[in-house]
Length: 351
Image (cartoon, rainbow, N blue to C red; front, top):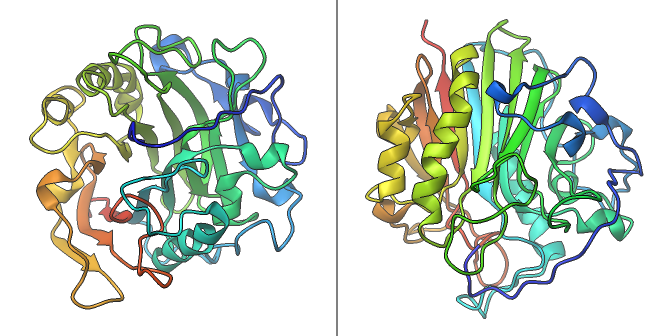
């Protein structure tokens, strides 16, 4: 989220979650992480079990994906997108339709066309709950197929407002949650909504993660998502902290780390991420196939050297296909977000 956007914040006094229920402990069978596992207390975050959510057809998107048996247990499709927050106004695109209610069906369509297994979204907030409608992740993804995990502010937080930002979702029929948590990108990573990595105004930023068991193959993965702050030097300070905190989790299971890193491939932060430990590899760099997906010809312009949305992986995961979605919607033929498009990666376990 860039500094040019107008922001409206909403303060919370209690932890509320879909239909008024909080799922503590990250769901049935979930274990809270230890300090070495980089997690905060499990009650600092919430898992949305869509099946229990009270939604209406006008408030929630169509349920995405079909929970059929996994055809290829060695394959994983990861979807990563900064959806542009619902309370943002991007003055770089004044001619575009920016209303959240207009963009939700477009975002739903993007996800639906790729039928992913794992989803990382950025710039979500849960203002919808206070207004009596489902949280924004459920508005996009629907209410039954996905397990949704993100941080919710609560009384006692250093800075209370409704901006989970980084959100994970995984297909409930395929994955079992083993443990989950988060840490904050600041000098005090265990203090909710703490800041301090940027000079001047900074939104609190975090990494949210979950260790999952793939029911189809029996293998485990660690899935993490983040949104590095856009103000320097936050990116180059967030990178080593992320590696330090994710290393114990990557030692347990291969890591998929996606997000809006606000860090192009020639940046110091990108170099730190790909040059440290655990050894992160950019799926774009190793993908056997790269595609631009678009419904208009010629496809919209896209600047590969300046890409900041990444899906990093650790061995032994391999990238079979990397795609950027450049579909456009509405009268202005615009993207659903102020980011060029979703990044979708087909990963594979080695045979």
